[in-house]
Image (tube, rainbow, N blue to C red; front, side):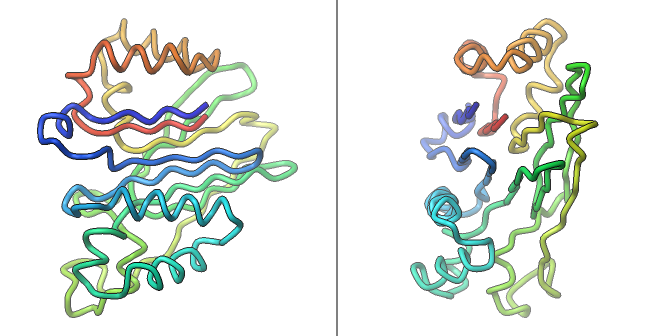
Length: 210
């Protein structure tokens, strides 16, 4: 299930959706472009395509640098996006991430919970590793991918989402209940309709892969 919807604030400002997601048989990927960059959705989509072609994260970024160049301004406007990449193994799920977002956890009883990933006011972007430290206000020492592992015997189903999911998690009870029901039964179209009907509530872009 893949949901990718534009936030209401982006519609008002005439901006593109800066989120992007990808799902394959054993891999899920969500990227959220920095709103301060003019075209970060381009870098996010290109990155997802490279991962789908078999590149790992560091290889994909080397390819992005070859395409877009290592100019600090170009990196800001094209390559600053968060990364949540979930890989399915035989007995577990492995999450590699850099930046904000959410993990969606469904336990063996079908209960769904959410775990927030956050860097606070300043999200980490892997692209910072390609910018001279004197040009950075934060993370001058560079940025590393973090990782988490989840056993399948505890969580047989796991998804990931951009930080726009917070508008559904913090919604009024009836809206949140409707969302959880649709999510549990993998009703992709129902979730899209729910967001469309309440578009004004979703100020930021939202991508869910589950």
